[in-house]
Amino acid sequence: MTSVDQLTRRTMLTKSGGLLSLAAINHLGACQGNQVSLDQHFPATAKHVIYLFMSGGPSHVDTFDPKPELTRRNGQPIPESYIKDVHFAMIPSSTKQPNLQASPFKFSRHGESGIAVSELFPQVASMADHLAVIRSAHSSVFNHDPAVNLLNTGDSRVGRPTMGSWVSYGLGNMTEEMPAYVVMTSGVKRQPLLTSYWSSGFLPTEHQGVELRNTGSPILFLDNPPRVTRAERRQQLNLMRWMNDRRFTATADPEIQTRIKQYELAFQMQMEAPRLMNLAHETATTLEQYGVQDGKPSFARNCLLARRMVESGVRYIQLYDMGWDSHDSLEKQHARQCRAVDQPIAALLSDLDQRGLLAETLVIWGGEFGRTPVIQGGGGNWGRDHHPHGFTMWMAGGGVRGGTVFGATDEFGFHASEDKVDVHDIHATALHTLGLDHERLVYRHQGRDFRLTDVSGNVIRDILK
Image (cartoon, rainbow, N blue to C red):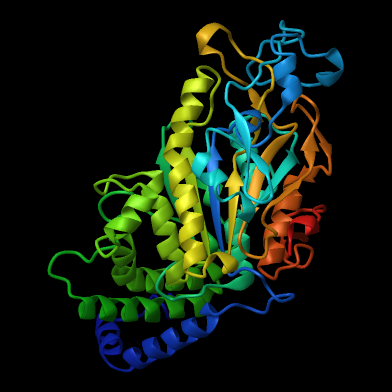
């Protein structure tokens, strides 16, 4: 029997009431020391990241990448040279040369920069001079789950840490009252969102994303049980801390330290999380600006909450909006999706800017891939297939040079053709704004050093100030 097993109830009760309180205070002080940013590799231009993830894959040729030649040759078979060695996800292989499909949406230029944006995003278009539009993103993964993994972890396989986890690992937390990495979801559930999309992988689990619920308690079981006061909960945590410390001394299991930190964080979140999720103190003007209605769960509400999270010190906020997988009825479905996100995104950018927070917050927009410039299906219910070979993402705030367009796809929007941007380049650039060198942010696991960007990745310096 170990010394831990020999612990008596009398000893536990004695320890939990007296000297352990001082130990708990000392522990909180140590936590506060760890909460501040760890040493950055160089001065940062951003403190926070808000990643607006359009799950399912928005069509680049219908939103931010106008293609006049696609319109001129609408309905014609795409030249074979464009689809040599290309595999589609849903278009049958028996369709040797799918027909080109023009966008039904009009594009126009906006702002002093003259960036072309489609009519689907009229309000985001009004913020064009804040955007750095990357039209040459590409990958080799054409199915949802591995593609989402790739955009989040730098690897299409499950088990790697997500970018938010790497940021938490590299910089620590800015506040002891909320996690460093928070996730919220909204939209039409056409594809499931897997918890692996905000997993810490092989990093300590304290760095995993914390999903906040849209209704009811932000986190299940966060509240104290009935008739348990906050002071009593504090005393219970002190006892648990003492027992976990003894177990760690006996086993040296690092996950025990993670467990201690998670208990302490949950205790602090009991006060802060409900306050952040309560929009009662937001003005009617602000609620209207974002398009928040009657407290209903929505992307609009999540965008407003994201701003509040930034103000509270949350470092990495990821908003997933589902429903973008338009294999059919694209015209109708994309119109619905864009209506739901256009106003909130523009409001978020404008609100952050007016509060002086956009300059220190990197905002990223995009999905796991784009959609094919060729048609899937036909008639009035036509759609577009998955398309990783060339698609659009954009960044704003946090050291980004607004009003810029970087890279290009070919005349049809099929392949990234100019200044190609790999997924690892997106990650390297995001880390760079936070003061992190993607080649030096490493974690040793199973005998080798791992990076978010693996063995590649280049900072897209042309879009940075």
